[in-house]
Image (cartoon, rainbow, N blue to C red; front, side, top):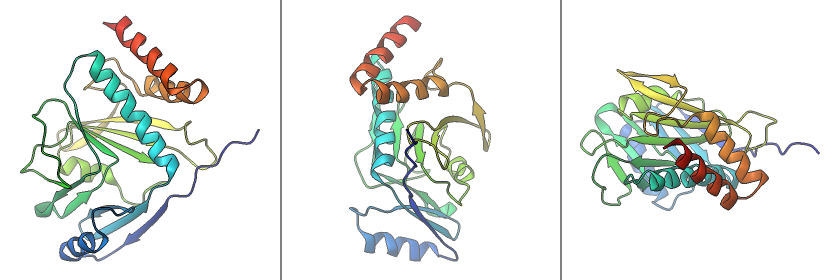
Length: 216
């Protein structure tokens, strides 16, 4: 049986866009816009996610919330949200951000950094490759940990790669395990995603809970 090809997320890069033009575009598109925006010092990426994109993001969110629940750790999920730093001329709309070590922020459409506390974890799903190198942008915003779920052409959307990056100084290094959830590797996250597809989400969550309890 042939593999499902990842749907084509539409990505457009606009050069020579001022911060003022970017802010005006945000106003014109409104808070209910479907397009996701990333602004990096004059370059603007516009990406339109598809249903499979949100499916991957929601699976990752289920995993994060269940692990936090099992470990009795407070967690605040923020999505949708735009992270903005006018001083650095940077902004990004990740799939979700998570706070584990700071008081819950009021729900608002934008988080301004560094005035607001930076999220502990940023999750990015990319079914098509971005032409912007976003890791330096995330580093400039001081996001301690980034999870990237990526696929390549010809892959099933639930058979991609999960990369975990930890901030060291002013740049990221690839990690074998999460610092936020010690013992949790990218491979274990991918195993959960595959189980949710081959079994069911509820069965995968039960196995995940059992795995966490065994590791205590």
